[in-house]
Length: 285
Image 1 (cartoon, helix red, strand yellow):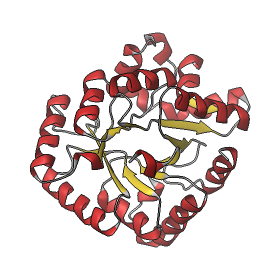
Image 2: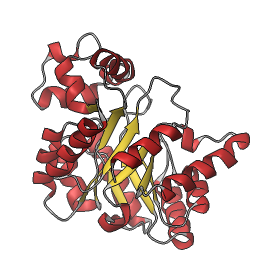
Image 3: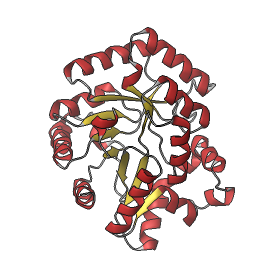
Image 4: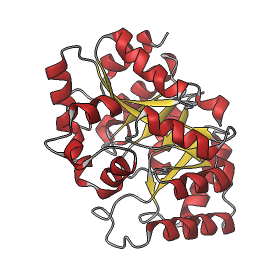
C-alpha cells in the first residue's frame, strides 16, 4: 500500500462523500482532477464507508480512495468484508479500509474501545477480509502496535510531527504511516490561527484527542480558548507556501510515508476547495 498512495494525499471531511444526487457529477469531476494533480490518495473523513468510496473509484483510474474513518460501531464486519471484496475486485489495490473507534459522543454503544476494535478485527478476519487492505486510526501506543500487527499501518488524525516520530518507532519500518495534517493557506499569523482555532474547537471537546495531546507533552493550558499558539502551530501547516512545504516535510522527516492534507479555509465542511487543492499541488511539485 505504501507505493500506491504516494507521498501526498487529500483528506476531505464531507464534500467528496456527499450522497446528494445533484452533486455526483461535481464530485466525480473533483476526484478526477485530484488524480490529474498528482495526489496519490483521497481520504474520506467523517464516518465514511466503501459505499462512499465507490463513486470516486469509478471516476478515476489510479488514485487510492480510503475511509478515514469507517466507524467500527456503525458497520458490521461481514458487510464491510463483502464491500471490500467487491471494491478490490472492481478496482484492485485502490481501496483502503481505514478503521477507527470514533468517539463516545458519536456512538451510543461506545464501550471499551480497544477491546471492541480487537473484536472487530477478529470478525473481519473470520469474514475473510485481508489484513493488508486495512489501516487503523491509531493514536495511543496499544492501538499503534495493533496497526503494526493486524493491519497495513496507521492513519492517525490530528497529531504533531513529534508524535509522528513516536508512531514510526512503534510501527517499525514496514507498515504505512499516513498522518493527516491540516493546512491553512494564509500567511497572516492572526488570520491563520483564527481559522485554525475555529476548526479545532470541535476536536478539543473530544477526549480521544485531548487525552492524546496531554499524553504527548501538551498541558491543560494548551487546550484552553481554542488551543494555544503552541498547539495550533504543532498540528497545522500555515504561512507562506515555503513555510507550508517545510511543515509537510517535517512530517515526512519524522517518519511519515504519506501525508493526508486537509484544507481549512473557514468554509463549510461539505465544500470542495478545488482552488486550494490546486495551490497545494503546485507547492508540492
